[in-house]
Length: 235
Image (cartoon, helix red, strand yellow):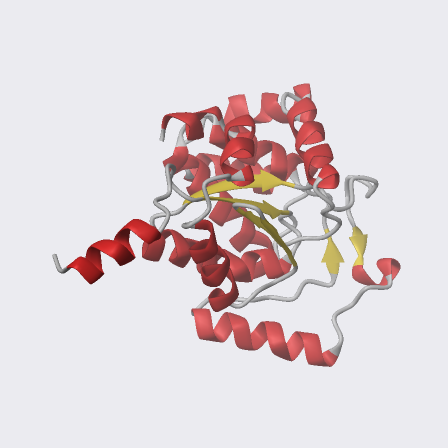
């Protein structure tokens, strides 16, 4: 190695930890569905750890959900064109439902899947997203969620108990308050080391934030990742 190379190398801080990205989402958030491939690309390109953090956007919704018209938040024509373009570019199926489901049970199923390991967790995560945003199914319905659980290899009866017992209610409540404490009020949001990004972002913005992370020793996201998912401490 030349002297100039040694000098440049010594001047570049060396990270002590694998970069971790906390991804805050709700399953009724279509931008979360569309952004997920970008986060997966970030993991592939930079070996980042992705830690999924559920954030129930509308906990006050009735169990049967509500028509979009009742919330007064239908997509504008411009936004609809934008999300259709995002889906086409990513090769994702996209349906724009006319209803907003209550996602509490869906998020609970995601947490049950988390406890079964990363592979099942991610499979269920993607299946729930696809059910609503890709197929227009009502993910507030237990039968829809139980079908997803069964397809992922989870025990259907045990999944039903998760809903009946409210087994993950406390965890979801803690995650909600974690997000609020960070200043998150909408999804998608991401904490990339020390940078909080609220709203859908191009891949390049996520990548730039991660590259800044790679030369930063103090990593808020890495610390919080271990509180969200204890398995992150072992990676």
